[in-house]
Amino acid sequence: MSKCAKKKYIKTNLRQMTMETVESQHDGSVTASLTESKSAHMQTQTGQNSIPALAQVSVAGSGTGRGSPAVTLVQLPSGQTVHVQGVIQTPQPSVIQSPQIHTVQVATIAETDESAESEGVIDSHKRREILSRRPSYRKILNELSSDVPGVPKIEEEKSEEEGTPPNIATMAVPTSIYQTSTGQYIAIAQGGTIQISNPGSDGVQGLQALTMTNSGAPPPGATIVQYAAQSADGTQQFFVPGSQVVVQDEETELAPSHMAAATGDMPTYQIRAPTTGLPQGVVMAASPGSLHSPQQLAEEATRKRELRLMKNREAAKECRRRKKEYVKCLESRVAVLEVQNKKLIEELETLKDICSPKTD
DNA sequence: AACCGCACCCGTCATATAAG
DNA sequence: CTTATATGACGGGTGCGGTT
Image (tube, protein in one colour):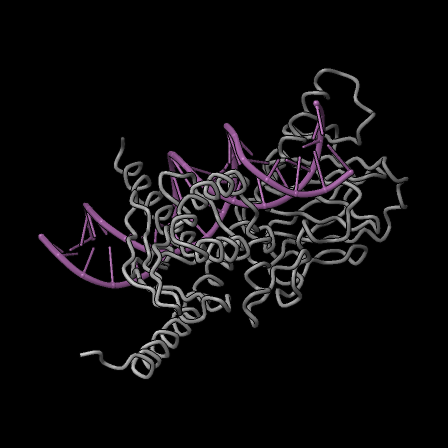
């Protein structure tokens, strides 16, 4: 294993471990430990505040070791003491449990000592089956959000606070999306707008838009874009319908008046008459249904693959964003539960002092 | 300055999960 | 069942701060 790989291995395991600890706290009966990678593990005991029947319990002694199930001593208001075992036990695959399941489990265990233990075993099997289907972060977070007021939910649609960047994933459904031989993406919208997304840059920042004002409205489904990686003069060319060529200027050359200039640092483009034949490196993409030769089929397959990669790239970004949000949500939840737990413990101590006079 | 460890980010692949 | 989407895992890159 190379050094880098080893580093990755350790890093990944650490993250997995911390996440599992986070997950453990969802069952409510184990310690909550949470940090993604800052490794400032704060350990706390989560309160059972959401269950009225268990409003007055003392939680003590918990095992959090990886590999040893967490056992928590819960003292019921009646004075009965029960051992509550953490539901999630290593080396169980990483699972995330919703608070609802946790509620049921704790309530069941609290009934009696022995029956609770036996039922707990059965329940754990059921739970494992349930938990083997890992819900998405969106669902988890939304569940958490419904529990904790003030925690924003992850919406299906992108929030507007992100400034609605011209993202391919969120823009009005384009007529066609094409991938060039150099990895750039060209999306042609219904209105004749050409959007060019550069790989390597953030899909948002790398997006450039062209508006064709004289393209003559090609029939839907018949758009053909031909792209040249770089012509001899160092420019980039896009061949668009109407036997025209969109040429990316090298630097700050002003775009002609017959096309909308890109704003800011965006490169400018010109529509020129096509040069002789197709330049080398041209990728021709056609709408489905018009394929003939094996070469075109191969190109179509490549295009599909690139499209899939692009989608997955965006999905991965979104997934990471959600995961971050999820972790933040858990962190805030832990903080809230810590405070609540502290209060409950203090309250319990007070009640103990009041209700249990010394029997000496 | 060079090196190292760490944290973070990204793209891709494989696969689990959801949707149709 | 098939297809689309979400996510874990992995490898690679970058930036930063500490150490030599």
